[in-house]
Length: 204
Picture 1: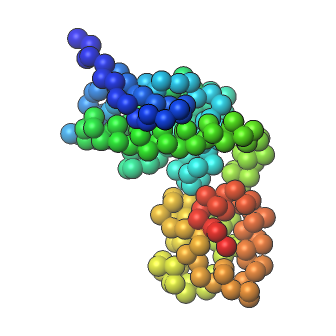
Picture 2 (picture 1 turned 120 degrees about the vertical axis):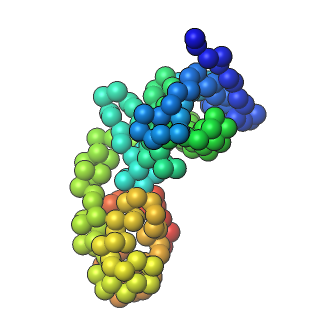
Picture 3 (picture 1 turned 90 degrees about the horizontal axis):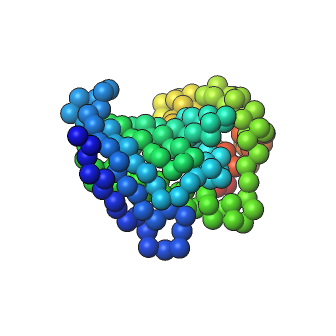
């Protein structure tokens, strides 16, 4: 027997995504005691998904260009967003939790839509080439490599790995703010680009 669809209001403003409907809830096959939730947003998302890539750390994002499908590893779960507005979310405790998380994501979606209205676009071909070269080692090569621990990590390599997963912010490397390490900042800008540096938490 099919479950009754549940509709929730997310925003009242004049934005792209205002509502979400829970279409289905079933046991999560990879996490006992939790659920997987299938949802449908009230707008299509074809134009915003490429922009959404730049709103999360690279280690949290998987984008399938041919299908225009975005999978995010956030909140200890996988969230897949389709251009039709369909969203699947696993490892969730309750439907209320899924709606709360969906509201946060819808905020990012609406922000991406607003950016698209301002003619802000993403050249994914160029971005894909840049992202394909980004890993812990490429970031580590641009860091001071002093293992000073001021960022809270024991080594610069550990810091680089935490940057990609969004657990640390680039701004937390204190040495990068000193004039003696300006070449390291230039290296990061060349390797990552200014947009990805901002995503990783740089505001220097």
